[in-house]
Image 1 (cartoon, helix red, strand yellow):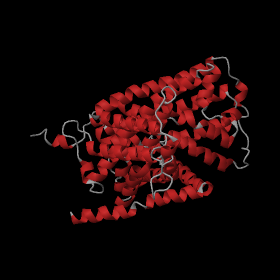
Image 2 (cartoon, one colour):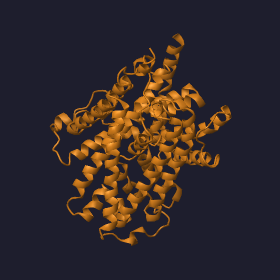
Image 3 (cartoon, rainbow, N blue to C red):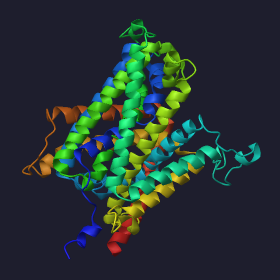
Image 4 (cartoon, rainbow, N blue to C red):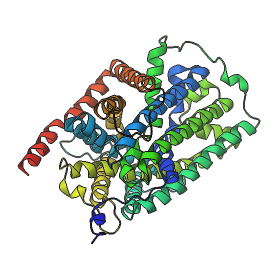
Length: 465
């Protein structure tokens, strides 16, 4: 009798180690291998390049420290979706979940899976069709070429289906796979750092000048645009909160995992970029198409592409797994609130996972792969994600006001300074993105606002019920 209700609930099986691995694995994907050249091209001063990675890391840490307090008070599956529902109401929560589903996280799954497939193509000749078939467009839907690079697309879809299957059969199994791939990717990146500094082929002069004005003439604008790339690389730190319903002792372990995991990522990112700079001058980094491969080529001539391709494959597969595992819990929580498709709120009676939510997420991410539009759409909404991050920072003030007497197993240090700094910088980043990339920002806001009719529909359905 007592075990029956448990079949309809998620199982708390993730340890602190699992949780830390989820944070690191969700954040470190392909970004550290692909974005340093964008940062170098925008700031073109060595010290500023490293400074942007540190600044963004500290901003991410401030967000993690702030969100950790909220997570300790609301340890429920769905993470920030639930935080917004409690603090700002159902509309804000729904728009966050809507943006997450339409492209913010599902588009990320698609983009990272495609990166995995492209690097597999370094070792295997992936199939492709003739020029006429690859040029075929879906009628009435604009520049969508579903048969273009079909080999890459099929491998990406297979990767998404594989990680969905892994996570379908239990969060403990998914967590074990995540541990393996996170350890592998950290070891791989650590190898780049050690080899770079021990190779004898670097130059300390590459780190200077430490300070200077970017060639664009505007320090704040250059740093703001460079941060778009670094924030993409740091994105995913809050994904652990989606799994709050499955972490053992969540009030203690979620804050610890957010903090330890974020600190580990900052250390990895900053030292990796220092290793890049030690081997290559900033001008060469800015011109590079794949800086990590160029660095390894400088150390092991002719082998850089193969070494980095293998590393990126390990890293991206782990990130696709982590993102798929965590994000499905947002749609599960929405469905439980009767604000999404009802079946997505079901739990598998044996595996205790949100199986329908995982499957629907998988299907939509695969469709995004086929459209080939995920990269562009993700560019539109990356800044919108930081609107929600800023709101998440404000949630800690609302909860302190609404629930002043609740026992807090964790409190954000230096309150209210850290949350205020996080909100101010996040708001500035959103403003700078709107000013510097106005057209993309407006499309992003439109995509978020497009969720309002769907919200009204489900609100009406909930009222009828």
